Length: 261
Image (cartoon, rainbow, N blue to C red; front, side, top):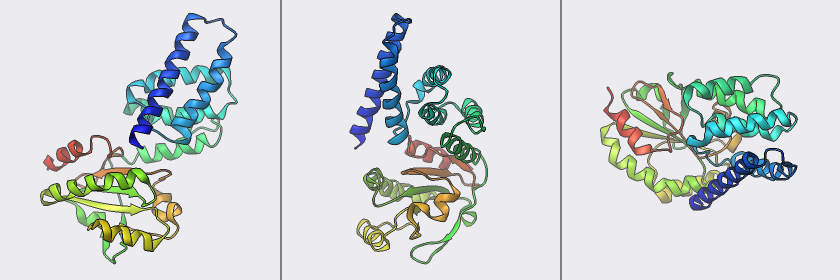
């Protein structure tokens, strides 16, 4: 699945580059419209519908191109939805600016709601995170009592292939770093309790797991605007949310947080 996703992203960006080259070489060609439609549909499918990660080094370029297309076709809601995804791959100052802009009434739905949710999530960064629940095994979990620890919050499900695939690495990381003050909290989006319990027992997952039969519609998923998984957040020793992209360069980020006082 990882190779498939990487290949889809590379293909989408290759098609994007070819379309840009064509527009540069033949700026007045009537054939550009024939190319633009399939290109937008491809970008929307890969980065919108599937939700594959947008290359961060290409995000500014994509933003510029999409904004030009929005001027040409202001009624195409797909462009606004792609731009929401692009915004989340932009550097921090620009990211907030674009998400704020896309949260306004002039942005068509559902892009406006998606942008507003992404903005509220982004604004959680650098602030204390509140999280309290009774775990599946009866343990009371309160992030406030874990101050002094670095905490990884894993939004996942047994039905999510990348989530399951990454679990062995998370187990190894937990075993390695737990003695240094590293903890993991699972927030499952599973609906079937029995399937979840069998998986936890089989994989010998020792950290607490949040469960609600509402699955992806559970209260915590709704509160934190979790629309797709896997999602990993990292919280520092002071209970402050430091990373929303905890899957990327995960071990290095955790090691750096563990070194902090």
